[in-house]
Length: 187
Image (cartoon, rainbow, N blue to C red; front, side):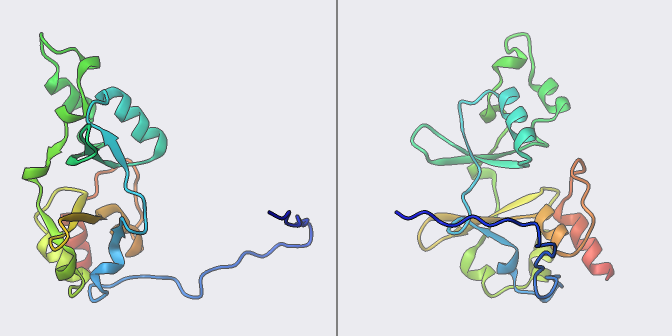
């Protein structure tokens, strides 16, 4: 191992910027909006985590969705910060279940209920194709699977797409694919 030199920044005052702003259109390849889990670590949570703890964790880390894993590290569903809203928590509280006993699994969307894109079909699609398919989806995330290898390959986030089409993003507001479809169609 060797030691690297450290330099002063006193005479350095310019930042480097990307060559061109990357803005997308409906004709941009769909893979450009994929968060590929082969390149980016997925955000996961254990199924047994308490819902209130998960909500605080997600808010602190600015994460809007987590993949829920069982004790064997197998995917069983997804849970979003929206799912953990105060309103949704109150709906789950009963005389037999206290607020602090609710778990991530009480709020997650189960694997069997989720619809997703196939990676190989997505590779031949455009962003317009994705938004057209998702135009009635009120969700913020859509998983992408590789049906050949039986793996969850990644996900597409409506919030990420909104940033890429240079739309201002209110971090507190729920952004759905439906909203983005309408916005891109209006351009």
